[in-house]
Image 1 (cartoon, one colour):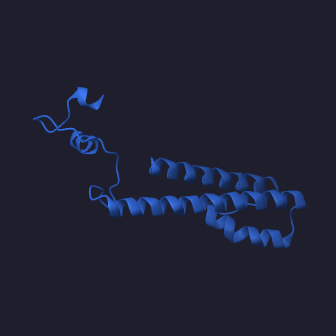
Image 2 (image 1 turned 180 degrees about the vertical axis):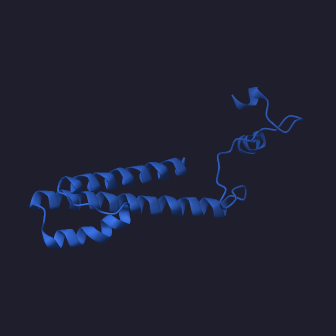
Length: 124
């Protein structure tokens, strides 16, 4: 679940970044791709005062939202790192969904059948 929330956070940040790029393109200002380019170049654009005050205010709000998503992503990264440290079944660099029947048995506390998995009735 945590990795899905983290991915949702990254997708939202990307969406906000794309909005900034699109709004700037409306004024003929093109920035390199990525959030880092936005952080790096927007202060120069604000200093040149090429945009109206309403546009600048809106861009500041988008930057604040991007920063908030970056903070959330950092929080999720910390949660995942802590989870990796606490759970011996998770291997660093190979975090994946638990799909093997033996892992399901471990989590549910049910005994696997002779083939190493659970009976279908045990999962319900």
